[in-house]
Amino acid sequence: MNEFLKKIIGDKKEWNAMEARAKALPKDYRVVYDEMKQYIWKSSGLSSTDIFKDLLDFFEEGAANGKRVLEITGNDVAAFCDEILRNEKREKTYTEKWRETLNQNIAKKIGK
Image (tube, rainbow, N blue to C red):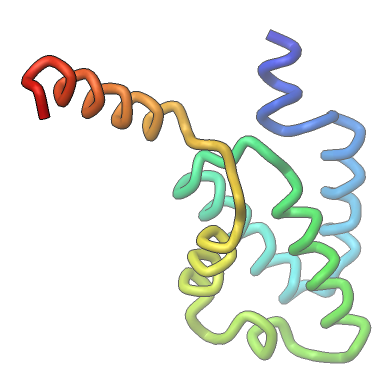
């Protein structure tokens, strides 16, 4: 079970350090980061925290340069998230694996 949790959210210390970094962001960045985090977890089934580390780096740089968060993400934050996910090389989710297995089994059994 411990390995499963570690795979899901990575090392707890690393996760806590990332959350501390997020809390240090300006308010508008924190709000967008938290909302994006929820969207990414719900929509992608990611099993890695790397995407969030990269996002924090990106947001910290933008904040340091005095940019507003929506100047970085654009007004369609969901589209921004979707683009990140498209570019993210990730493991398949359990659901994706099950779908793939189902389709392969059917194709084998009916000869297609």
